[in-house]
Amino acid sequence: MLRTFMLLTLLLYLSGCTILDDDRWPAGSGKILLTFDDGPNPRDRVSENLFAVLAKHDVKATFCYVGRNAVANPDIVREAVAQGHDIALHSFNRNFPSFFNYASMLEEIELSKKAIAEAGFERPYTLEYYRPPRGIVTPTVNRLTRNTEMKLAYLSFYIHDAPAGPEEAESLFEDMTRAIRKHNGGAIVLHESRFKKAIEKDNLVDKSWLPDFVDRFITWAEKEGYEFVQYGDAPIEPAS
View 1: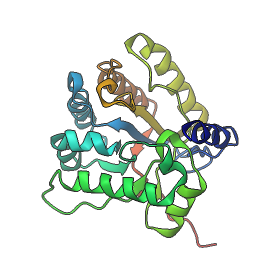
View 2: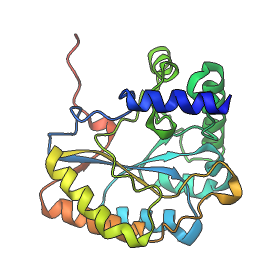
View 3: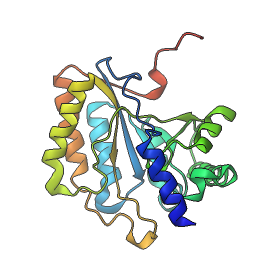
């Protein structure tokens, strides 16, 4: 069964059924939408240091949290909201069945919503965005966005940073800045941890370099004249 799910996922990916959309705002607008996947990550104070860098530059980001990580780190979830960042759902365990089974997908989403809500906020927080695991858009994901108020946390491009350690930071920086110039902005993602199905193997990739990378990237982007935005800043599309 798992092999079947993996094969279907690969076929969907190869057929272009992903969250990538390089024609969609903010691509082409000179604006950057900065998102982070697979957190929260307390190891090496990665999440905490990311918050400090973003606050330093007064940049708001979107954190796509894995539900089980939110359960383990409610203080980080609270801080993200307190600092004005957006939170998107990124499944609970990122199980393969939830890619194709609507009931399983809804169950993981409800578990994630519960985990985030239980972090406790000073005022109610509404979760609007969903980023499917591995960025694959299955018919089940399309059904979710069609039948509920959840919106897709889309991207303009990937730079494949998820498994990267500090030794790859320089090449990733070149990839990121090159792609931003090519697209004149865009919705982008970095990974604050490397998700592993086995919890004891999660967060083993060294991501301590990420906050300094983000600091350098924001400094570069602002010097180049780019502006940082969030999904909710998108222009209202005219009714068809």
